[in-house]
Length: 149
Image (cartoon, rainbow, N blue to C red; front, top):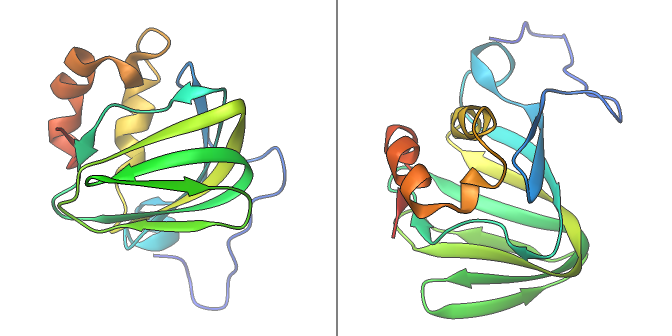
């Protein structure tokens, strides 16, 4: 656990990063030492198109704050357009996807509780764009509360 009175900071260009093909993740806060796994905060940057397969988290909420770009979040059956300054909360147990519009974009993702960053780090050891391959995603994601739906 982070010692009381000691800040955690990540400067631009710092933080653990992983290239997932269509997107890149930069971990800002996560893990036992930094957040006691209470949450994960990550920045995702990527190109146009689908960023993930349809999936569900049964034990966590995931929320997104759009920094740059235009997105369509599909949460359940609802399609939510979101641009810079938009916030989207996906309740646990809800099927969802993310697709970036022309030019791609950048967003912050808050995962509560933390731990899902480990799935992205594992996916980053595989061929590019494995995050959007349903078979690969199914084989890995079940260990991280991220079930393809």
